[in-house]
Length: 335
Image (cartoon, rainbow, N blue to C red; front, side):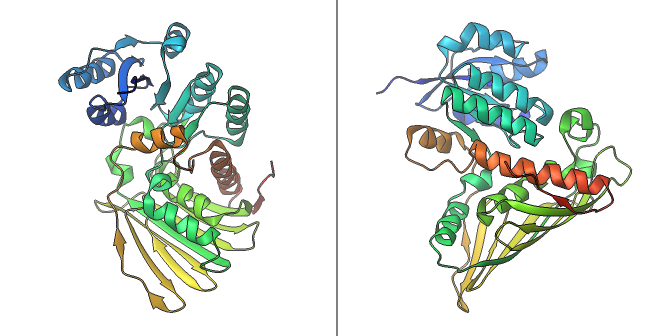
């Protein structure tokens, strides 16, 4: 059997602990080191590894010290920290010459995206953002068929996502703007934005947006109207206040087809030239590390690339700018 890849983790919160339950058992990986500012979080992740029968990983409270001491003893790094820290930490990992699996969203601004792209190009490392939708077989097959011209010209996109997010995350860092980078639209809504960015096959040209914080420090409800460079029109609605539950529904209108799909790639409905295909369902990825390793090995296209992250960041920057100006249209800067 080939030698195991040595994995380091920056951010040992609940998502990292959830993934570690399966990662610590993978034949391809050796979980060797982690870093987090919280001692209880570090211990929780260590306990998960030990419970899986894996050796105890080394632990640090400073990710910079971890990278300095372990860069030559690691192959890949997974980052799962509050959104506002992604840009700096991801660039540091890339500059250390290590392949990176980065929790969504990639970064919080276009400036951070450009910095990360420069670091990636200089070191030539693999960087993948961990959007379940971007790695879903249904989303990837839809992209392949659209690019092949099967559906015809893209005319319009309508996306909706909703969750009882405002009450679910009371007191959580996700509702602290200084580290979250945004509210519901940038957290759960990021899945919708990323799937739209991936399947639109075009950058955004202009954006108009409104936000309502519903008494919170971050956006809870967001409405977006936009135009793509390819001429297609886009509307996106995110509602983070409501009854229990979480779901999404995105419709892509083409000249010859209508494609309905959810943000995570859990289901898809396609009608081509008036003929409906059977509804398809797929399990939402519970272990995206396998996809990352396939991308790293060159056997799967990188749908979570830094370039796709830049498109996403351009959309998010424009949404924030327009919403701050009470819906004034914003032209999306070209890179």
